[in-house]
Length: 168
Image (cartoon, rainbow, N blue to C red):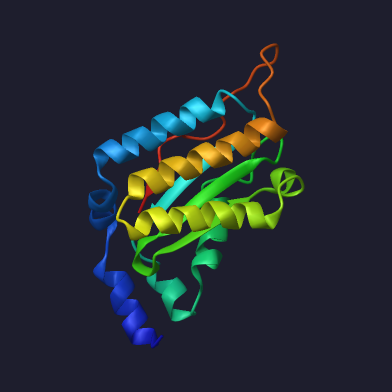
């Protein structure tokens, strides 16, 4: 894609577009679902929805995956006690989904599983159902974390990261 067209496409959308696309109710439901999920495992789950890439990323031709990895660090998803944080990243301008998982969980979950979750999100999004796509993804990632890092009732399970989706 031509760099100028890509820049226009990304700069055309802003945080208000992301908020409008998802809606306040969906964002609250995602937050509640993340919180509920995290009571069943010791992992941390973040959702980040970005309308468009920052200009610097666009100038250097960075991909949605590049930005997702950057946001994984900025949102401190990598900084969990058991190295089991997972970021679900959605880039609206390119309709791209990236799932970035820390090394503790990637050692236990095959790559095709993350792709299956992304594919299911794409299918839901094609029908315009962002809520279902994101909530199902949170549920599926939460189930993986609960399977591999179950919460232990006899141990403290602190909430290390915010549950609210990061919308930019």
